Image (spheres, rainbow, N blue to C red):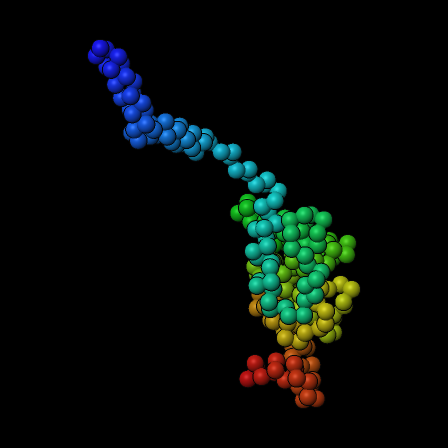
Length: 218
């Protein structure tokens, strides 16, 4: 008589155990552990190594630090639309950037070679390359390059077809002539004396730029 009752009691107690919250949490915990292990596995998989920058693309950026607008602010009349930034060698000034960067990388800067390259670029009509080479060499103390830049800015020698300067600039001409003259260039000293004589005359005639430049000599 009691056996059936025990069986039903056991059956009832089993149903109650299956419905307990503790038993329902076990699958959820297992699922959570699997998800966590999966995430850890994904995070531990090594990613792709960053691509190395080709050696040919670094050179222009190095020169860009030396020839960007902040380094050429001393020449306000430069037609900057003719100097384009970038690394492609087909762009104006890119060959000059690559040449200067290669010399800086080697640790030996040959200013005479840069000046010769500037003359060649100017003869070929590559004005951006020529200007950047002259400018870099002049800033490094190359008198002949400074003399060229002075002549490009001098009203007596300014030629838009051979210069990036949109117009002549007495102040820039004086600056470059003076830099070349201080390096011992005889021709620069002569041109500087001639320029000062012309500036004095122009200042007396009321030329505002000449008057501004003449004030710096006092």
